Image 1: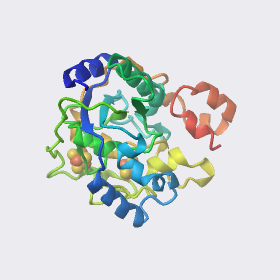
Image 2 (image 1 turned 135 degrees about the vertical axis):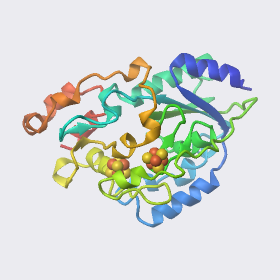
Image 3 (image 1 turned 90 degrees about the horizontal axis):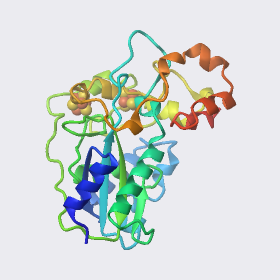
Image 4 (image 1 turned 45 degrees about the horizontal axis):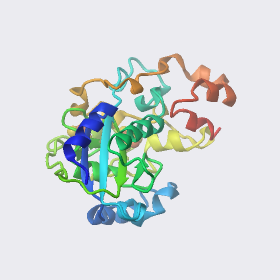
Length: 293
Ligand code: SF4
Ligand code: SF4
């Protein structure tokens, strides 16, 4: 049996900014909404999303015997998250300025699992993005934030510049978290107006096929059309959000920037070879892009 206070101490010590624990059970509402979204063609081309749907919405199917999911969030907001000065046209989303969050979150979650004495792979599965799990729904249920109109999890203090990771475990917890009931999007709608492609739908989801972030991360340059000044990712629907304007910069040093994206303009990207780019950005999320070149 896990203890919620012990989890809180372990998550804070590992560098998480927000966390919660939820039972590992089917997320039937979220699954129904996803199925509708998928059937309407809003995820066309992102075939991995259509696989493992049952597991994605039920952690006990993803990891048989699972009883609980510990959900953690870390801020990565940096000085460029809210926008670049001038008309720099090779902007890179701020989560990609630092060490790949998959690496950082895995290490942090392993520290937590060790501290809680559940590091045995029979007792816990560490999940970061690459594993099918409905992490935004879990984060809302864990009390980390509400799902914003821009489809992202928004924490009242930290905003939405956060990455999420989970530990699915066979242990029960003595106290489970309460879902976030607050909805700080009421009366706003700035992100819908700001999105350059109209990708934000009215039901707090995106048409992923229109989203610049998906295009510039998932596709090679030959397939790009207009990217609205973004080289990797897009943060327009976050930098306009009032909750991000008041959020503090990140404090976890794992998310300190490893390079200044303003040094890499269109001339640089036109000339650099794939191998040079891979070696320059090897430890950052950006390296994923060069595999498509
Ligand atoms: S910009 Fe406004 S509507 Fe959009 S996510 Fe932020 S608070 Fe919600
Ligand atoms: S990331 Fe950019 S393109 Fe995608 S929904 Fe947000 S503003 Fe629109």
